[in-house]
Length: 97
Image 1 (cartoon, rainbow, N blue to C red):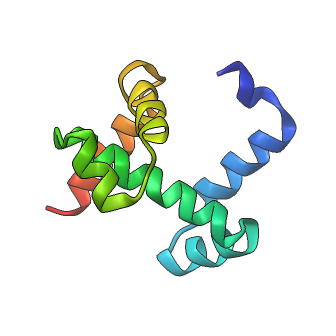
Image 2: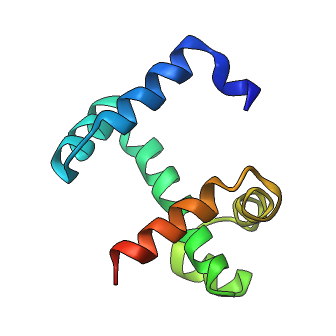
């Protein structure tokens, strides 16, 4: 995680883990990012969720509007990355039980 040694990244991580409610998180994200940035990140989360459910690319394109390049990039990070997507999906599944 050498990329996260930067002071700004550390501040972002600390800010995210300090949030306690859905409302606090939504307010922070709305202040932090443009609508386009939020849409892009939300789309990637939908893509990785569908990938974890074994959805095929065509279905993911149809349901999310993501390009095949985006799907491929998300899939590469999901399969070969640091495990962040997998951890979030695991936590989300636990919350939905």
